[in-house]
Amino acid sequence: MHEATLLAAPAGAGAAGFMTWAVRGRASRVFGASEWRGPRNRPAIALTFDDGPSETTPAILELLRGYGVAATFFQCGANVERLPEIARAVRGEGHEIGNHSHTHPLFCFRSARFMEMELRRAQEAIGERTGAAPVWFRAPFGVRWFGLGAAQRRLGLTGVMWTVIGYDWTLKADEIVARIGRRVANGAILCLHDGRELRRKPDAGVTVEAVRRLAPLLLERGYQFETVSRLLCPTN
Image (cartoon, rainbow, N blue to C red; front, side, top):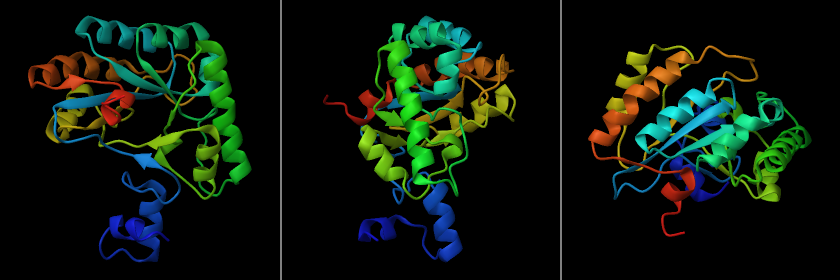
């Protein structure tokens, strides 16, 4: 294993602890190229959404438009096939689209072939319906596994984890805002959800309310919202 990977692992981690970190650690690159934060030298952050598009996405787009905020949406291919107009609206509003697998499965103990097919199907669904071929990938549940890195390389995808996750599928809006507000810093990648896996008409109102409060709060603190591409590759 590469020396840099070992040095990045939690100090004192045993075999089981190391494996847990390798699979789900936000800074882990054991199973493929991955990023979890941007540069710390400027007040820029990336707001990201997983599991969409859904029937809730238009309400989030309206809020982002009102505040002039750019975001990155990691979309599930099956949801894109179900709601292509909303998927296209995300791109039409100037936001970035990433790959979040096709059916949102848990990748641990899955075969390399299964994982590549999930990424490839999502890549094709997103590309065909929005005209945008993703370059970023976020694993469902943040779980990576053996063979995922090779699949990413073949499809030209780089993994993206997060600096702060909002737990917006379980917390209330005020708790989400407080959690993110305490942990945000220069270069942070924030993770929320505009869908709930593959559910139709998901109850994601708490996410909408959290965005309604977070956007002005973070803008007032001087943060600039950027897409993942802009945050991680500011010179491009």
